[in-house]
Image 1 (cartoon, helix red, strand yellow):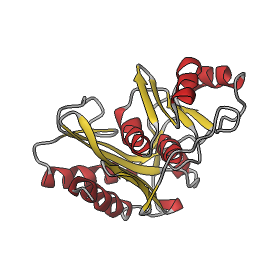
Image 2 (cartoon, one colour):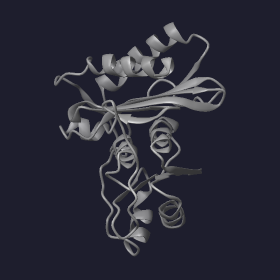
Image 3 (tube, helix red, strand yellow):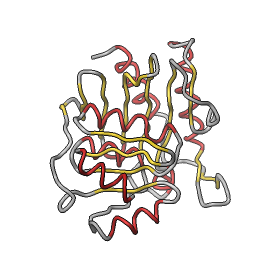
Image 4 (cartoon, one colour):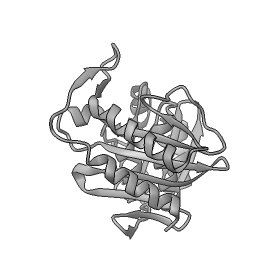
Amino acid sequence: MDKDLEFLINLVKNASQLINDQFIVKAKDDKGDLVTNFDYEIEKYIIEKIKENYPDFSIVSEEYNSEEGLTDNCFTIDPIDGTINFANNIPLWGIQVACIKDRKTCAAVIYLPKLNELYYADQSGAFLNGDKIFVNNLDINRGLYTIDGPGKSVGQLKMKDISPHCRDLYCAAVNFAWVASGRLSATNFVWDTLWDYIPGQFIVEKAGGVIYNDTKKHIAANNNKFLEIMKNNS
């Protein structure tokens, strides 16, 4: 296992220990987005550990460094992706972190604590709880897909005419992780927040999938045909 990946796995597992059932929920904005005290506490913990071990790396993160852009060497952090699910005791939420070196993602982790699912990847492949994972080979007639993020409704309506198999999970981390493990066939994250899609896209790619990025369109799919359908319609 790559040392960067080993660092991320230990980091995320330790960060998850900060979470308990006594949390405070606040409105993040006037559009219904929520934030909890653990979003801040987990992100602060992860940032501190990264600065101790990678002092020359920059950080892009949801709560404290959301205006930062990618650099040659950096980390992306999403302390709790799916906060609204978390705040309502729905287990579809996770912690996700990626390490970027020389402008390329080299390691990524998505941890779904309530499901006891640890997804991770480096150049050797993608894994779930230690077992290697691969995308599925289903076509548009059978494969499930998700479209998530602000402005997703238009894509969902267009795709409905092609396939009725859309699922709404409200968590980008789960969406990408489940494409990598073959539960879903494709996902489109309709926004440009780096911490939401960089870890998951890397894990999907290392599981044999394909990815596409454009403004407010960040797709991962099991094959190029499914990817093209999502790119043109979602």
